[in-house]
Length: 366
Ligand SMILES: *Cc1c(COP(=O)(O)O)cnc(C)c1O
Image: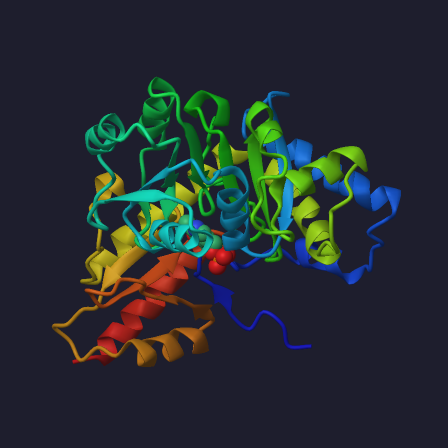
């Protein structure tokens, strides 16, 4: 089989190790004690990565990351509640859409996509609207690569006694997050981002006291967070419905490899290093990044089209793919951009290679 003809410079699915992929060659039984143990080990390892103790618990949920976000929103925010959504990208915008589908009361506080939400602005809204019960923010906005200040939002949530939901999809495992210290009530992430597994499930790290109060609140059967948790607790690692067994086995291996790499702080250093190399190198070639360095996160970088040349994204995409790398189109509506991710099995040598390929390509343009 002709596999791995290219590496992914995309923020998930991303390039995984051979050893992670090999785990998917076995068919596992969902009722089997060893398989259920695997789920339990994953749940406790994730708590460990989150710096959380027994005040927290982990729930795994079938589906991509959005399923996890939707599971939380539709399961823990009641009809009399209201959520403040800090919007500065497509993923936080998607949260407003989830609210509309489920008729969840919300207020969106919008910030330009190249800026982080200002805690002062959020506080003004909080002070003026006592109906707000939950605050939510995306940590790493994959739309632009910006890293939002969840510590400041968490401090506000604590001061105003609100619950705090964080979409840490493209940061958890690649950026160290002390979940209790930040004051997070629910954190959502997924298998195919910084933990470097394959797509198929998301996971929620939840404060037990809060989750316990949500029994019967879910607006969806398949995405009922409380029910999934209750079954996992009662049946020692059983999922409510069929779980993605191959993906779970691959994820368990990805967690072992994260530990072997030296844990989250070491992986974070690798990401910062490759991200900086990539941004520096692209800027040296004449590309301009969409956000400034002080807010740039270590996961993905958005670049503007170089309009001073005869530039065609699709043409560049095909060229890069032919040379072994696949990149991401932009996700901004008002500007033409493309994105380069640096998470997954991407190392310094890859960045050097990618920059040489870009340099060659740009030489060909007039
Ligand atoms: C990847 C991602 C999601 C989930 O997207 P899916 O396509 O459902 O996996 C949500 N939020 C952020 C910030 C992401 O990067």
